[in-house]
Image (cartoon, rainbow, N blue to C red):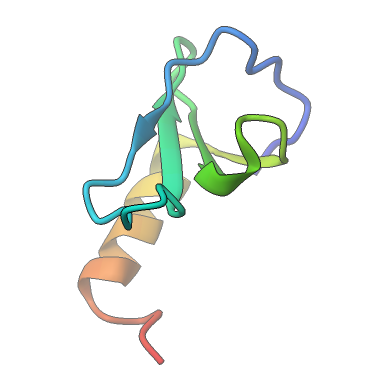
Length: 70
């Protein structure tokens, strides 16, 4: 995970599971192959996590496998 990227030109997509207030997560696929993730309720001014492609695939696999359910 890297935190030193300029995300000012990132194109963010909101989760299709976002609630009516839009409070969910947004993802941006960056030109250099990295993936950024942020909380949508911060209106684009909050922090973002930046992942490599391999880290993102591992995260998605964990979600698919139910590793993050309460």
